[in-house]
Length: 389
Image (cartoon, rainbow, N blue to C red):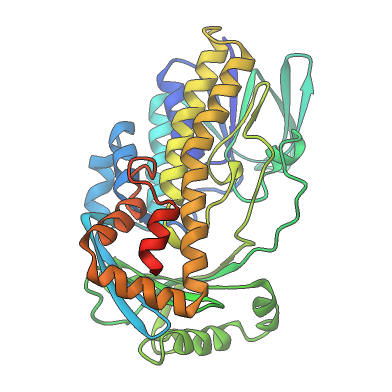
């Protein structure tokens, strides 16, 4: 029977492994960290991500632990704009979501190995996955296909020649879980300036996911006094309305970044990239978990088609690349446009004014953030003109 190695046990890797195992494919998932693990980013599930969880068969188990998110309260350059969702989003700690999904993969028949993958080598038509197990022993695993779901800076992308050579400077997110904010009424609060932003995502029971996103130079300047700088920056971004100095951190502080990752291709031969390993969208619009789950579904279908010989490797990888591009690039364009709007004060003020005046524009923006395919409601040059006119 053909064997598949999935590298990475986050939402994309676990969902892909579960789908492959459910199809009767011999799949082994390699995850370097024992679960449950702390991973604060991506604790937001838009409506499209919920649909993916529903299709995967885990939504009913996940939903009771989620906190309903009614919308986003956006503070941009002294303007406040309330943007409600037509359907509530969910907030859930990644330690719980990832645990649910990994358990689901196991239940479907995937083998889970706690190990650090260190190399992937092509040998004829197969792949040799070199890893170090939990005891430190070096071992190998021969696979007919590999799915790299190992996140930003993907080792699989690098080792298999799929990484982009372009150099990008990315921002960093610093934060964690905090309690003590008091009344958080189910809205994500975002305080945004040209240089940075501060986000509070209510997880329920007086617990919130807090992230401050800054550029690399600012983060380097914080060395040795991160908590102090987080307090000062949060107060500055929120104009004194909110700050992390007046609340209590629950668990460890985390830093993630750089928040950029590009590849020249998401598939080649019998290697596929899914989730952040296949490309990263700025987290501001909250597309991460949806893209992880959708790309996992597409990758699993392509791998199955290739291994069952219903499609050649060339056709399967080309189809996956095409489908991945359709969902990824459209959302990356939206994220880039939103980022551009926010970074220009006079433009963002006009956009806020026009959004307040136009129900249609608000509906369009929130549909995109909720995960609706942008191709269905084009966020194009005409829309941008309507925002800033």
